[in-house]
Length: 126
Image (cartoon, rainbow, N blue to C red; front, side):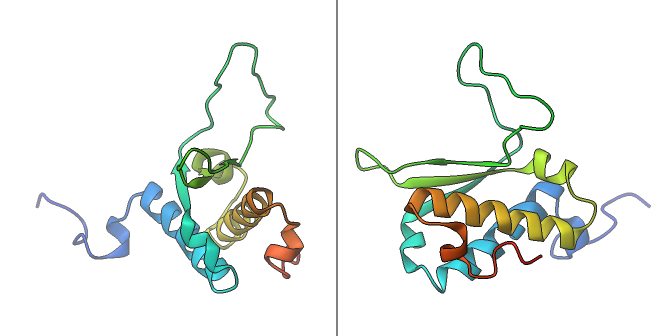
């Protein structure tokens, strides 16, 4: 028998990228309850960070897990979470969800000029 193992609406059919994007969205929705201004920020998932200029290097220990792009010239602010570096540092879905939330909180805090504990009082408790 040929064909997909599960129908498209079943979670088994979701790609790793889609599952990861859902984790980011869940984290954003948790924060939006407290910070409605997050509706004006775009949240993106990229597979890996890119080097923008010559001489920009990082070691295995300093590969970024996320980043921000401040709003300017009419463009919305952005929070980016890098999927592969987060996946490599986690073993299971729960651990991955916790790290994704931590990265989102840290990046939102940077973009808003706040501390992570202000953005999410439970930051760092996991």
